[in-house]
Image 1 (cartoon, rainbow, N blue to C red):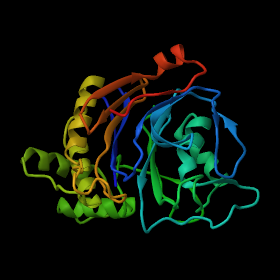
Image 2: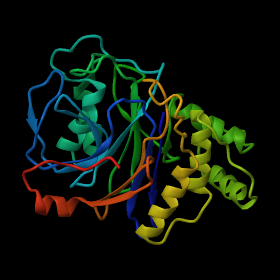
Image 3: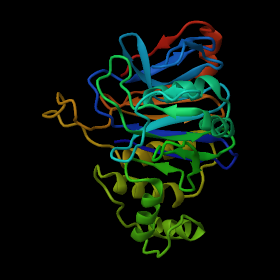
Length: 316
């Protein structure tokens, strides 16, 4: 599961926000990796990160599996579950950079500065449907990618040829594909059109002004509609602090509650944390759903204090 969106303040400060609803038995927690840190992929040789990275991930036998993050160049990536749609190569491809879905976030953040650089690199990359080290399954993911310019793109591996597509809604949840979500959003707003455009924005603002209830519940299409109408139905925030408050309010409306009777099940979907990645001031806001404690973590401060040493924060 999961819901994500990007938002730009009136002063063009870019932020990415997300809920993490992915079922797991190991905790998600904020992780800092310095520039020069040795990173591993399933098929490629070890490599050194060109940029420092901050985001949330899990530790699996000493390996870092990231769910979201940004780097000191201002590039940000978040993965979301995308079942029944992904197309992966079955085996490594000669003369390609072979990565598993779990490798993508650290590879992009460790090597590239911008959405444009990622777009240029994608034709050289092959996504391989193989397990990642000690993981026991191949995960179907798609990714929302943004940078300090405000560009928001989506990587949806629905064919073996990888490319980014613009996300005009600046929202992403889970299956179905982005185009299907946009069509459903327009139908909800009683619009007979396939695209997201100014008419969709105007109708979103009218819907918010009408004070009608937004869709609720865990269904990805409902969460997409809720997040998109909230994203476009309000004025852009004037400050970063207003943007953070606005984004947490939007995320709170799509949280999937934890069910104590199901929590020990490996497939129980519930929101583990909410995070906001502020790309302009390089700040990571992390709120665990266990206690709602907000951690505010500065990447520049970490680079100064720990120029060569990784650091893992408590998950709650």
